[in-house]
Length: 205
Image (cartoon, rainbow, N blue to C red):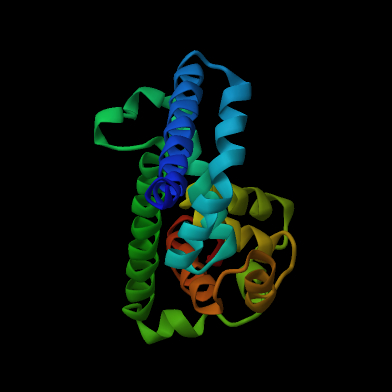
């Protein structure tokens, strides 16, 4: 009798896990049929765990949220990517999140290294004030050109410069608003301004 009682909790645990796996598989199959309720159910079930995983890797709340959203968007676009022979739905989702988080860290590190490699003269042109971004662009025509130049930037650089230019935020304020490290904000500003300077070179004449 004691042996039976000892084994009972384990068998219950296995049974619960199997039911959960079956439920997850059904949700993914329904997502394949473009069932939005199933997608929302899958998101509600695993998004908190996914965000915790991403946050442990990138250590930036906003970036972690973006990674989770990208991973679940990939599920919506290609639910057929799940292979039950390779593991559970949860493992599949967490694998996608972890892969994207590691890629994000590598991109941030590459951006930081590129910013550090910039010539000292370029670094000095960017301070902790939004005025440095907009000093040359006061007229409506110039503002139009700035918007066009911003549109050509990578999203992470564009977002930072838009907050500085259009919202008048300093780099410190941008860091506080987005949850990004100040060093990341500065590197994105440097890289973005370097690219914009090519487009806006005519304004200096």
